[in-house]
Amino acid sequence: MADQSIPEARTPEASPEGVVSPEAAQKEGISRRTLLGTAGATGLVLGAAGGAVGYAAAPAQATPLTSLGADQVMFHGKHQPGITTALQARGHLVAFDLAAGAGRKEATALLRRWSETAQRLMAGEPATQDDTDVARDAGPSSLTITFGFGHSFFDRTGLQKQRPVALDPLPDFSSDQLDKARSNGDLWVQIGANDALVAFHALRAIQKDAGSAARVRWQMNGFNRSPGATAHPMTARNLMGQIDGTRNPKPADSDFDQRIFVPASGSNDPAWMANGSYAVVRRIRMLLDDWEQLSLKEQENVIGRRKSDGAPLSGGTETTEMDLEKTDAEGNLVVPINAHARITRPDQNGGAAMLRRPFSYHDGFGTDGVPDAGLLFICWQADPLRGFVTVQRKLDRGDALSQFIRHEASGLFAVPGGAAEGQYVGQELLEG
Image (cartoon, rainbow, N blue to C red; front, top):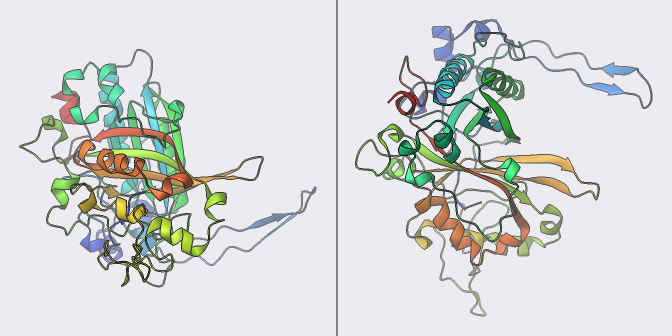
């Protein structure tokens, strides 16, 4: 939960990943589904206790697709989608293990299928075979599907010599209480969309495409605030109520690419990782009952920023540079020495930075009423040892937030660059 923010939402025509604006989509006729679809409202059914009778609200009058549904992200490109794409309202993370006896041949066929399906669904088109029609009335809704390879994938496919050194397992951290069944995996898929049904449709299609080649190892569901839910674009809030991610690297930064993406040359990474990135995935449970017992001032001291607007406790606005040396009338540091925002600053970690692109999650309540909720933490970097590991080690040594969170699942995945037209993700690795 580093103090770095998701890039500000861009207008579709300005996206580096090729988001198509509604106007452009209308001119080009982006897909059969987009042309035919309308955004309808689902009726709410109120069932009487113990009875079969309910009252259904009349559906709202159908309206043309808004920008929410019509926005499209391009599948083909220099980088895979879902990395610098603006935060989406719904997300699914799913890891697969190759089936017993499946190897490089089966993995190659699977990545071909997945890439074809991803391209079609991201364009708002149905899957090639046996489409479920779950999303037939919707447009692309900024759907992105991103693929990565875990450490074990290379053993299963006989490609050990092509495994990047950067994919070595993450070290143990003191806040880890990891469930191995919900960690790692041969293959990882990230799905994001601004419509819940579109996101689920993609999840189901990817799972069905796996067929006999791979089985689901674990799957997690997340959400963010819907686009347009606030009066103006702003950094997202997490389930602790904090503005989360103010210092995220931004694509406009001069060193953004070198921090986030593997260079095409001059790197220790294998050639197939050019223009790719490494994703660290952590399920971080927030101990909300404990957190909410703190006073507002105590919460702000843990983070080092005001809860209302994300401004540093040293003063200013959200984007004001934090004054780490400022003291109060009694000589105490205004931003506590163990404040989360202080510890995670790149200038406090040798310049280490990562692009955080998380989803919140809530998986219900325990029998004791305690919420199972928190953050599906996803961060992107060119080198996880210099990015996530450097910062997490620093947090391990005295972050005030540590007593209010618990890392319950973890994974590290090599995410290759984007597929060119006519190619599939990972083709250089699997056929090179």
